[in-house]
Picture (tube, one colour):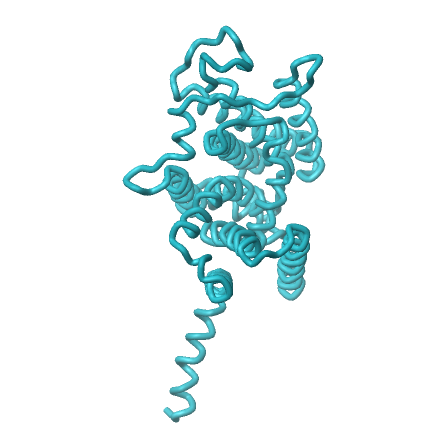
Length: 339
C-alpha cells in the first residue's frame, strides 16, 4: 500500500466523522466563538442557565420532532403549551391569593395540576391526530385551525368580565419548586428534560411505533403495503406530542410562577426550526433525538450569546430567520439530489 493510500484512510475517516457530527461541531463552534468574544459567557452558572431554559423548549421539540419525521407538522404546539400552563397554574394557586381564579377550590394534591396539564395536551393531540387521520385534512391546515381554537379556549378559560383575560399568579411553592428547584444540585428542569429525552429515544428507536413512524415518513405507500396502520400511528404520535406539550406547559408555569393566555406563542415555530437545524427532514423519514436536542441548544446558545454580545433583539430575530431558511434550503437540496 502506498504512502498516499495509507494517508487517505485517516483523512476519509475524519471527514466522515465530521460529516456525521456536523451539528455538534456547529454547537461547539458557537460556544467557543462567543466565549472567546465574551469570557463571561462560559461562566458555569450561565451555561447551566442555558440548559435550564432549553429544557422546556427541548421537551416541545421532542413532541414536534416525531410528528415531523412522520411527514406531519403541528402549529398548535405553542398554544397547547400555553393552555396547559394556564390550567396547571389555575389549579396550583395558593388559598390566600387574592386574585385566585377558582375562589372556592381547596388545596389540591401537587400531582393534580400536572395531570390536568397532561390531560389538556393529550386531548389536543388526539383531536389533531383524529382530524389528520380520519378527516384527511393536511396537518398544516388541521393544526393551524387547532392553534386558533386553543387560543380562543384558553382566553375564555381565564376571562373575567368585564376585565377580560387576566394573568394567573400566586402559585404554591411546592409547585414552583418543580421548575426552580434542584435535586442533588442539578436543576429539576434539566433532570426532567433528560428523562423525557431518554423516553423519546427509546420510543423512536426501540419500539414498533418508532419503526412505523420512520416507515410512514420515508414512504407512506410502502408502509401501508407492509401492513402498517397509518391512522393508528398518526393518533399515537400526535397524542405523544400532546402529552409532551402538556408537560412543558406545567413546567413553564412552575418555572415562571404564573401563566397568561399568551404563554407559548410562537413556541411551535422555534421547535420546528430547532428540529430542522438538528437534521430532522421536512420531507419525513429522517431525524434523531440527539439532533433535536442539539438544534434546541444551538438556538438557545445563539440567543444567549447575542444578548451577552449586546446585539439588538431585532437583529437576533433576523439572524434566527436566516438560519431557519438556510437549514430548510439545505434539507430540500438533499432531498432533490436523492431523487
